[in-house]
Length: 263
Image 1 (tube, rainbow, N blue to C red):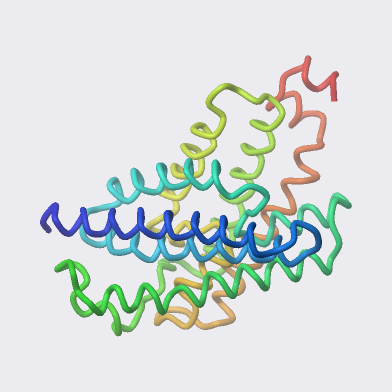
Image 2 (cartoon, rainbow, N blue to C red; image 1 turned 60 degrees about the vertical axis):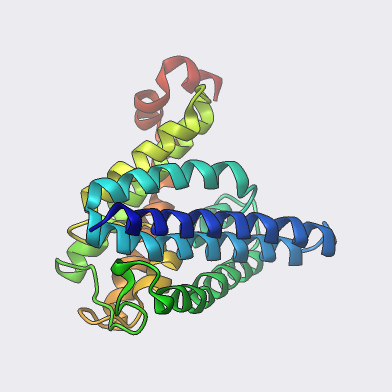
């Protein structure tokens, strides 16, 4: 495939990031900073940005390989970490907050709903872009039947998504305590590496909203199997990271004796 097609894909992703940033600024001007509405809007915008870019990353991976896909994903996750603010575009972070008493079940449910709306609705914009076929890699993709990324049994897929999500969350918690100079880059590198490691097995989504927006109803797994792998697997992994991170032996391993004593 030509570099022109790769450039068009890159341009689309940059355009999505710019549009999302504009939407955030407009939202801040139009909505009151108090209450749940601006929080939900921020989550919806973040999820739409995430899923729009990841739809295009599918094109990149299919035509230019996983290595190229990984480079784009690494750069995007660094950008998202800098501009999303309190948004996560991922429901299990709010589930962790509920578990630790930092938020209510109602807010967790509303944030998840907003993320699903943003992530799923943005596909229509992506579909129109693909339909225009600016790049040869987009030919026939707008109305093509999608295929599931799950290449193993649903239970093994759930284990892969769960364990990898747990490792991602443990890494993020460790970095938040240590606060190294390039923590965002380290976090992005760890996350991207785990995605690449799981890519040919479960797809390496580690985010129920992202997986649902991109792969719900696709040929290759049932809806129940999708829920088992991408919702139950990932969410259980994230929730398990909370008590595991509090274990003394884990804290000593990840934080060292000095940080463990401070905590």
